[in-house]
Amino acid sequence: MSNYHIKHLEEYYQIYRKSVNDPELFWEEIAEEHFLWRKKWDKVLNWDFRKPEIKWFEGAKLNITENCLDRHLITRGNKTAILFEPNNPEEGALHITYNELYERVCKMANVLKNKGLKKGDRVCLYLPMIPELVVSMLACARIGVVHSVVFAGFSSSALATRINDSDCKLVVTTDGSFRGNKTIDLKGIVDVALKECPSVENVLVVKRIASKIKMHSGRDHWLQPLLDKASAVCEAEIMDAESPLFILYTSGSTGQPKGMLHTTAGYMIYAAYTFKNVFQYKENDIYWCSADIGWITGHSYIAYGPLANGATSVLFEGVPSYPDYGRFWEVVQKHKVTQFYTAPTAIRALAKEDLSYVEKYDLSSLKVLGTVGEPINEEAWHWYDDNVGKNKAPIVDTFFQTENGGIMLTPIPYVTPTKPTYATLPFIGIQPALMDENGNELKGNQVEGRLCIKFPWPSIARSIWGNHERYKNTYFSAFDNKYFTGDGALRDEVGYYRITGRVDDVIIVAGHNLGTAPIEDAINEHPAVAESAIVGYPHEIKGNALYGYITLKSAGEDRNHGNLRKEINQLIAERIGPIAKLEKIQFTEGLPKTRSGKIMRRILRKIAHNESDNLGDISTLLNPEVVARIIDNALIAV
Image 1 (cartoon, one colour):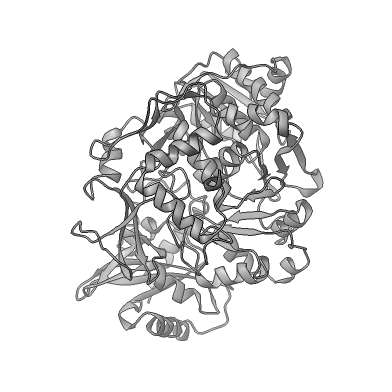
Image 2 (image 1 turned 90 degrees about the vertical axis):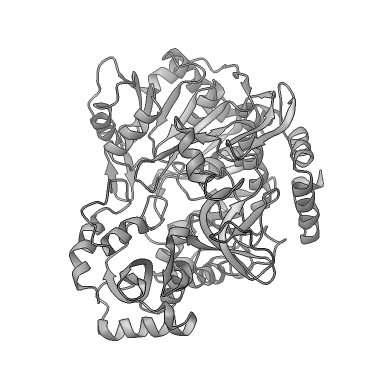
C-alpha cells in the first residue's frame, strides 16, 4: 500500500490530509495491512481529552513480539536483526539474526516465567547497551510482563525510586558495564538500591565485565546458567490492544519522575510507521540510532520500530570519544551504515574536535542523518550536513517526547525540503495547534505560541503509572481539549515548525517574550563558544533579565572575558535585537545535562535565583560535578 512508504511531497500532503480528515479509517488501513493480529478490533478509537482517556483498537488481540520476531522468521530468519558494536572495537561486532533473537527471547521469557512472573507484573531492566537489554524487553513483552528500563547510569536512589513506584518484582542487571576506558559497578548500585525496595524478589545478573561481585543468596542469580537450561519454545501471551507494554520514567518539573505508561497496539503501529518513513528504511539498509534504550528514542527507534519492520538495527555499547573521536565514523564505515540518528549534544562535541577524525573514514554509505533529543542549532546542523552527510544525506530534525511514543514533527528525507533548526512539518496523523497564553489558537503562518496537539495519535502515553490525576493536570489542563507538549514553537511563512524551547524557557523581559533557543543559537555562533544556556532571573526594573551560562571551546581561552562578554552581547543584538542581550554572563566548564543530553535549565534557573540549596536530586545527571562549580562561580557572573 503506497501510504506505508511516502515517496514524494505531493504524496505526503495527500496522505496527511487523509490522516487528519478521517483518522480512524487511515490508521485502520495501516493496522490491517501491515501487522499480525490474533483478533481484529471492535472499535478503532475511543477518546476524551477531558477525562483524559484514549483507547486505540479496542477489542483487538495481539502480541507485539509476534510482529517483531515470529512473522519475520520465514523470510528474514537469517537476516541480522541486532548488530552489536561493543565498547571496545577489538572485541569485534556480533550479528544476531532474527532466528537467533527469537530463540534468545523465548529462553529469557521462560527464565522469567520460572521465577514466577506472570502477565501484568513489572520488571526493572538496569542494563547497559548490550543485546540482553533488547532480549529482556522482548521477553517481557512475550509473556505480558511490563518492562521498566532505567538508564544504567542513574544513581541507586534514582533506581530505587523507579523500582518502588512501579512495584517491580524482578531486576535484570549486569556485574558491571564499560564506558570508554572505565568500568561502572552496576551490581553494586543495584545492591544499594534494593535495600529500599521490598517488592524485588529476584535479581538476574548478566556477566559482562567479569568482575568480582557480591551475590545475595536466594535473591541473585547468574543469568547464563538459567538460559542454558531454559526451553527455546515460548508461546506468546495474547494481549489486549490496550494492555500495558512498558513504563518509562521521565523527569518531572517537581523532581519526582513520571512513569509514562505505554500500551501495546497503538504504540507498535506508530513506532513502526514512523520508523519506516522518517528514515526511509529499505530492506537491506543498516540503521543505527546511537541513543540509549533508557530513553524513548531507544525503545521506539532501536528496538520496537526497527524490529517491527524487519530491519537491521545497530546496538552501540560505547561512547563517541573512545578509543578516539572518530569512533562514530569508524562504525559507519565498518558496517556501511545507511541511516544514522544521534543527539545534537554529540554532534557539537564532535564538531569541536579536529576534522581529521571525520575525514579519514568513508561515509558514502550514509543516506539519511537524524537528530533527536533537543533542537539542533544552525552551526551544528551545517557541520553535520557538510562533514558527515557531505550535503547528500538529508538531515531529519525530529521532535517528540517520552509521552508521545514516536516522532511528531519531522522532515521526511528526500520528500520534505529541509531548513536548518526546523523540525518542518507534522508527521502523518499529527494535528498541531499553536496557542496563545489566553487559550486562543493562533491561525495562519508566521506565528509563535505554545505547541499543543488537537487529536490523539496511536502512541500517546495513556497515563502516568499510578497517578492519572497528575497525567491530566500535566498534559490536559492548560488548554481545553488539547494535549499540551510544554514546548513553545513557531510556524514560519511556509508552515514549517521550529521548537523554541520549553515554555518555562520563554522569558518575558520588559514585556517582550523571548524564547531561549534563538538567543542560544546566536551565542553559539561565536567562534569561542561551545555551548550555552539562557535562563531568566528577577530584575527590579525589567521584571526579568537574562542570565547566560556559557561554555567555551577551550577552557583556557586566551581572551579577555570582558571583551568576550561584549562580543557575545553584540552578536545577540545583531541577530535578535538589543532587548535580548544578557544581563549576566557566567563562563562555565560545562552545563548540567540529563543522560539523554538535555540541559537541565531548572537547575541553572535555581542557581540564578540564589536557590542553590534547593536543587533536588542531581545524581541522575550525566555530569553532577559541574553543578557545584557553577554554584561556586555564580557570584562572579557579570
